[in-house]
Image (cartoon, rainbow, N blue to C red; front, side):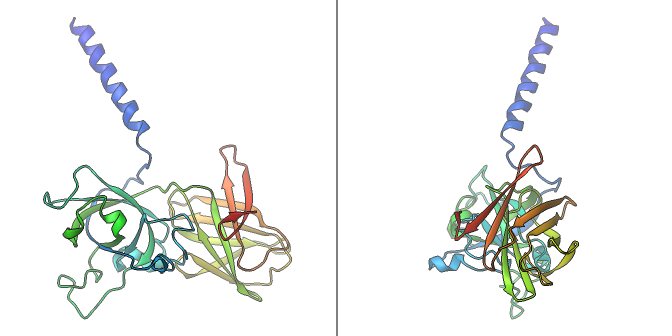
Length: 272
C-alpha cells in the first residue's frame, strides 16, 4: 500500500508539472522579480497612442495595442530596451491590488525625469526610481485605478508577437533609416546590419529608439538585414525588400520552424 501511495503521489506531481508547463505561455529570461512603482495615464484622444520615444508610431495599428509601458531612465537605457517585454504584478497593498493577476507589456516609450521635484516627492521617473507608466486599460488589470501610484514587481520575459519582424524604411537620398518592430524573443535589438545586392554587410547605427540608420546608396538593390537581440541571437533575413523598394514601405519576415522564412510587403497594415 505504501508503494502504491508513493506511485500515486509521483503521478500527481508529474501531472501538475505538465499542466504548469502548458500554461507557461511567456517563459522568463531567468530574471528575478524586482521592485518598482507604476502609475497610469488615460488617453484623452486616440492620437495619444501614436508616437513615443521608441518610434513605433501608431501602437494599436502596429500590433502593440494597450499592452505597453513608458519606462523611467534607469529602465529605458537610452532606448536600447525598446521592444523588451515585462511581466508586472501589483504587490504590498491589499486594498488596491487585484490578487493573483499580472500583465505583460512591451517597452514603447520613455518617462522623462522631472528634476523640479525630488525622486521621492513627485519626480516619479527621476533616477534612481524604477517606474512604469501604463495605459489605464493595462493598469486596471492589476490594481484599482484609485490607487494611482502603486508598488509593483516586474521581471523580463520573452516576447511573443503575432506575425514576424517588421522593417519600415524611411529617409531620403543616401540617408536610409529603418524602424525595426514586432520582434519576438528578447524583443530589444542591440545591433543591425544591412546589405544590398552590390554591397557587403554594412553596420547600422542607432538613431533613436529602434530606428537605425546608415549613409549608403542602396536604391535599386534588394535589401537584406541581420538583426541581433540582447540575448545574442542574430537573425539574417535575405532579400526582405525587393529591388524596387520605396521609402515609407514596411516589410515583414516570418521565420518558420524549418528555418525557412516568408516575406510580405505591408502598406498601412494591409498585406499586399
